[in-house]
Length: 112
Image 1 (cartoon, rainbow, N blue to C red):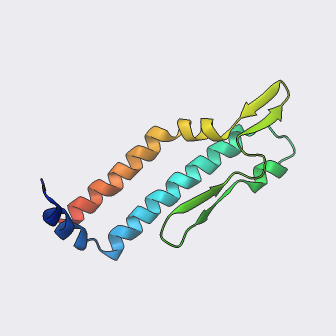
Image 2: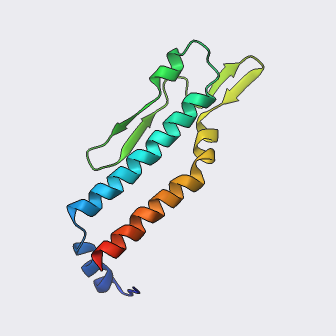
């Protein structure tokens, strides 16, 4: 389905239902959980205190806020600083993009 122009796009956006928004929220939540899981694996702490602080919280509009804790970005490991936030983001980038594209594709099919 090819749409061009603002009015055609606006008309299609009006057809977005609560079910479609829920599927977008699900995709966002799954993406955030995937980042949190990988960050917990990559963090170099052995005690688990910093690992337990990493979590995601749902926002009021279907967004997700990921809290990496007070020692975000880099924690000193055995052999120097070891980053865990950016590698977690980079490692999940393709999968997160594919999940978001699938949610958009399914929404367009539902609107047709």
